[in-house]
Amino acid sequence: MIPTPPIMTTTHEVLNQAHALENYNAYANNLPLQEAVKTQGAGWAQDWLIARGAEVGSAEWIEHGRLANVNIPQLRLFDRYGNRRDEVEFHPSWHECLGWLKRNGCDTGPWAEPKPGAHVARAAAYVMFAEIEDGSLCPTTMTYGAVPVLKHVPEIARDWMPKLLSRDYDKRFIPAAQKTGVLIGMGLTEKQGGSDVRANTTRAERMDDGSWRITGHKWFLSAPMCDAFLVTAQSPKGLSCFFVPRWTPDGRLNELRIQRFKDKLGDRSNAGTEMEFWGSQGWLVGEEGRGIPTVLEMGVYTRLDCAIGSTGIMRGALSQAMHHAGLRSAFGKLLRDQPLMMNTLADMALETEAATALSMRLARAFDAQEQGNDGAESLLRRILTPVAKFWICKRCPTLVAEAMEVHGGNGYVDEGPMPRLFRQSPLNSIWEGSGNVMCLDTLRAMGRSPKSVEVLAAEIAPALGKNRAFDAFAAKLKDGLANPQDIEMRGRELTQGIALAMQGALLLRHAPGFVAEAFCASRLTPNHWGTVFGTLPAATDFKALLDRAWPGQA
Image (cartoon, helix red, strand yellow):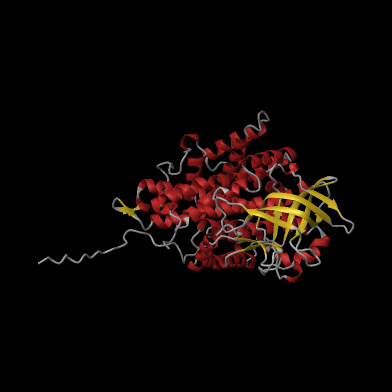
């Protein structure tokens, strides 16, 4: 008799794994952001931001962010009859994301409801949304940057501004005149020029009715379903800026032809395209031949968003790392309680808080300008915008990579959020001017307005005398800025120095002492400056930094 084999039973238990981070409040759990919002003049928005933080941290909105990225846009060049369509279809979650951003004024809110602190409140909401979905921030930012340009063009502002300021997101692919809300994109970059838009070859020809005929191409044109675009083209008087709608005033599709999608590293939810203009109808924006100053006016706003967007990505990565380390055990205790992990997490928390302080201070400078304070705050905004964009965006990929490593192999798997954050992390440093362009712009700001260096010094001065390392660093920076020799070669060193000095000053003035002391000891003292996260001095109050970064385990 053949014996009956034993019945094999297996027990599969999932042990020592963190659950997904969801259903937490992205604002209430972010003490540095709350404090920066109050310090920079938007304390009135606290209740509104708490409500938005609960939405952003909910499982529902985290899932919308995931679905918008795994279901990438689809290009529909023709309709079923063969007519040219040049339409992009998006997943419903993409539309939900844009609906949230438009509804909460993340595009044009500071102009729709102007008040002191409006740009700071908007920046805080933007930071939180960047934790969960970044592709939809692209058309949001371009629309934000377009408003200060278009509001000075009466013939365009009359018809378009009410719909730009609307809180309605209207996804329909129809003429703007029939919509309740609109979004604006832009097309500047061409194959041969990159950041050097002076090399653009797209041409503009004036027509008898006062419009212009645009012919040429754009190598990068993101969010092609926007309702209109600000486009650069060569006119008889030189490079100029033009407003080019997707539909002409008589209801026809304008001659904008999508060539193909860009297969991008990240930003997968957003359609990046190569676009050709086949005699597209457009209207001049600004003075003919002065297209660069016009687009720079728009660019200063979009560069702010690069800084606050990277701050949000960093905060999202830190939140994921803190959550994981608080639930996962190794070698007999929680990761968060392991000394070396404590140092690493605290260092990342310090970097994220410094980015938050700098980006919110910059947003306040935008508020001041909108409120008519064009003096010191305007100069500070001019020099600090490229500085903040350069430094925060540079620090973002390194921090996100470190946060991914906290998770081990789980962090490298696309089922979780870390790979998406990592793929997104280099984008803001490239978009709207790469690192070297930002450093050159910083030097240009100092050269054209030497008083901006005085304004910068005045902003740093209240922190002097509070920390020896800071005082020494500020003195060295002052000498470096005053020395014209090889200044362009030292552009990165000086821009980095301004960023660190500003962050140190803000933390010394407004953050708890253990935060400011740790920052100065680790960032401003040469013998403590490490090349990786996790090199804070042993005297650092690690527990206080970690409790501040993640006050409640979600």
